[in-house]
Length: 372
Image (cartoon, rainbow, N blue to C red; front, side, top):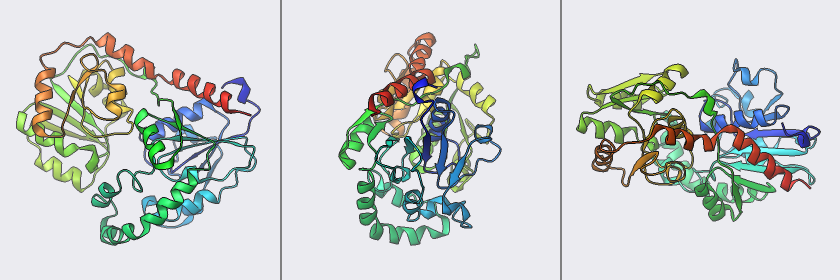
């Protein structure tokens, strides 16, 4: 840790700690950058994870509410109250890592409050209608579909007001910075999230398959890949830890050339990365570390040419783009890809620009500039 921060009392606030995804990887890097920081979150369900073994973790009152503490998304109207209830008066620096409500915390006047923003709250702003059409509340979906349009106006006002609380915004991408400007009227400095490139190696062999991994939810576009590879007949391996109706429907729909892997170990995931012909990246994403993990494994990426992909994939050097989320566009891109040669050394060197040491250095420099 930078010695200038050793005498500072630091808190890291995040929306929830439950599943493990890109936001949690950022949290891990923040905790590595500030090893003595305390953690505040709405709910915590990562018992047994060595990352949290000795840390001071403060959860909100939602943690004590049966059912809601495990179905935290249903606690939408309670999370703002939960984060406002935290007492952060003893801290000199507070960093919220958020795509939802953790930026709503209130700090003392001389505290430096920084929001590391993964995106302005998607279900209030940029993707409200998309979320409304793909609710994941099971039997409660009809209730929330009726209720959300009636609530969202006040929630947007609340969220906009809360966006004035951080002293500084940091965005995980240029696209997110533009959204912060649009919805919150705040400027944000871009510090890209990171991976530990030392954890990814090349196997020395390349298989005959393409690879995709992620949570099996609608906007991740698993359906697009299933339809595309069903038509082309090319081999695709899909890994997910989401055993839901969509997963079951798509698995049943998949032809023999598509293999589904459920709850795959980290070791096997790295093997799939390093031996794949290419990693498929079909969704629109504000940020997603997985394509960088593929490139750190010396593997090129075939991506939908929008948002995060444009900031991380270098066309014709580390991968190629398809311009529409259609079967025809995906398969055309794959055909073009198979005619090209990619230098794996260039792919790996590009991924190293997103290494965790660079992230920490940029973050330390930013905070030092902002400290009074």
